[in-house]
Structure formats: C-alpha cells, structure tokens
Length: 285
Ligand SMILES: [Zn+2]
Ligand SMILES: [Zn+2]
Image 1 (cartoon, helix red, strand yellow):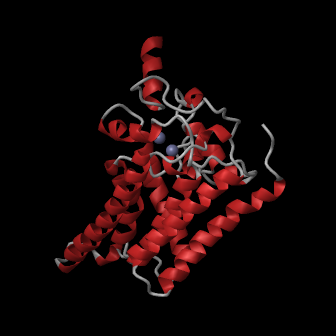
Image 2 (cartoon, rainbow, N blue to C red):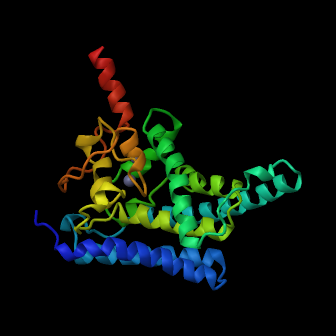
C-alpha cells in the first residue's frame, strides 16, 4: 500500500475549517437553520464522495452508494430536525413552568459560534462515547447499532447508515446538554453539522495523510479499526469526533493498515467489541 502524498496532510484541517466557518457564516446571515444544515451536509457528502474517487484507499470499495443507505440518510435528516424541534418546544414549556432552574443556564453564549460548537462537540462526545460503548453490548442498543456495522466496505454513506433510534442518541448526545444549559439553537445546529462532517469523513474510503491528527481526532485511519473484524473482540476507537475518551478509558488503538476484506462483523449476528469480549471470558471461565 503506497503512502499518501505528504501535502494531503493539509486537507483534514482545511476541510474542518471550511465546514465550521462556512456553516457559521450561513447561520450568521440569518438563513433558515434547516436549509443551512441540509446544504452543509449535502456539500460535505459530495466533497467526501469526490475525495473517494480522487484518492481511494481501496479502489474495490468505490462502488455505487447503496439505495438503502441513501434512504436512511434522508430518513435520519427528518429524525434530526424533528428531535431538535421537539427539544426546543419541550424546554420552552419547562422554562415557562419554572421547572428549569436558571442556574443551569450556563452555556458560554458570548463565545463566537465556532468556539461554542467546539464546546458542544466535547460535551456531546462524552455522552456519545458512553452510549456507543453501551451499544456494543447485547440488547436493544446493539440490535439498532448492528445496522451500522453490517457493511463490508468503508465509504462516506456508512457514517449516516444508522437505525433511526441510533440517530436519535447520536443527535441527542449534544442537543440535550447544550439546550438544557441554555445554548441557542444555531449553536446546536453548527455542532450537529461539524459532528455530521466527522461521521461522514471517518467512514470515507480515502488515502490521505492524517499523521498527528490521528492522536487527537477520530479520523478515517482511526475509525476504520472500529469496523475491522480483527479488532472486534477488543472493541476499540468508539470516538466520533475526538479520541480523548478512548484514550482516557483504554479503548484507543493506533491506526494500522486495514485490507479490503477486513471490514464487517466477526460472525453473522454477533455483536462486536464488548459482546465478543464477554463471550471470550465465558469460554475462559
Ligand atoms: Zn460501533
Ligand atoms: Zn462507524
């Protein structure tokens, strides 16, 4: 496998900046938030699909997008918008009825929008890390999350390929804490777009230089291991945007080459990660 050219190291920070700053600029212009988030998400997906054509990790993974994946992408857009509307209306009611203590309203709204999104990403990431690990254990969460682990290739639309219930917790992870703490909806929307960018990019079939970035962010090189059969028994790299909590809780694995046939579930219907660990522990006992 050839190493990607050194200059491609610049693409990750450039794209991240472009998504955050571009979306923030559209929000500041006062455009309707559902339009902004949909336009930004569509731009992200098209850009990453183009990158996969220009610099694929495995040419064999560059097949046409699955219709089911496109269907889930559209369905989950609706789930996202409905959840946000429900949260805003619900919290307004709680506030009017005095059930939401004003001491909780501690969100740093004076910060620029991209900085608020950075805070939102870290808040949401802790919740998401816990839920992602829990969803690799036997039960209802795995029954939903397995949909995300069924494909045997990595490509952009594997990211949003989530059961709608799984999409709910991915979005609620940052939406609930941010809104309860008093964040404006536009800060929540920017956080959602930045998170969606990482979800799409980390599944992309791209060969780019992520040297150094892999130590901090959940890049494609890092997240690929989460979908690799040989890492399933241990359960690694649950992070969506950053790897901070993987590092803190001992589930971080450094990027390594992943072959074209290495992706997918360990055995038909089996849960990856903690489930496999538990099965191994039972056998040892
Ligand atoms: Zn997973
Ligand atoms: Zn994934």
